[in-house]
Image (tube, rainbow, N blue to C red; front, side, top):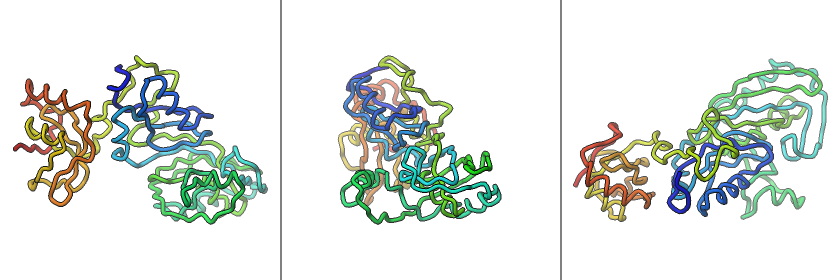
Length: 319
């Protein structure tokens, strides 16, 4: 694997418990000697699972990755904490032995398809320029606004009754969903309180847990890097000939009327190399992201192999 300034791509990292998402980014920044390292969505320190990592110019592609996420979490009933998870300070307890699985399933109905969710007090949501967790640590009380979150699927995987009953869930949801809030809100519906006992993210940004790697798997010469083009297969594509590709990469505007490009498109050269992301705005196909590391490679590639393409679904455009 290349390392240093030319490195660009994604890692499907299985974040270990006890690490913040920033801890992982900092470790990989040192490992690969890169300044530009980012992630595709924060995981709480207690959580494990998929943490998409972008290296180099691939950090500019993070907003274009798929947004659906999936989690497997265990909720403990009869316990309320200030952080809405098991790591927080206990502020209330109750006996949950009277709660049945049928009641839990009924309580979960309020979350199906989505609901107006209030983020945890200890979260990275910003209010008046400050993170909520910063305000919470100072003991400042603030009204936290709710916001709509999408819940695509909620499945009960296991149920353990008792005074501290637990329910294990599989949750498919949209971006911005806090599983800690689901735990807290389920406890409120059941009247005994609840907190999140454990959490694993099984899918994020198109990456899945079964294909993930650990921090111990990685080193500057490892082969776990995922090419940017592979991570963006969900986007439609447009393929440019050599001359138009060169102009597009240099930021020149192009009028294209033959195809619908109002959504973000992968921009490919004739050999299938990803040049960046483009989108039609005011009848002009504008470059939203250009990957500089691909430009010289694309020009050389087109000169020797302009008749080939690796994406048969792409729309062709030539000047």
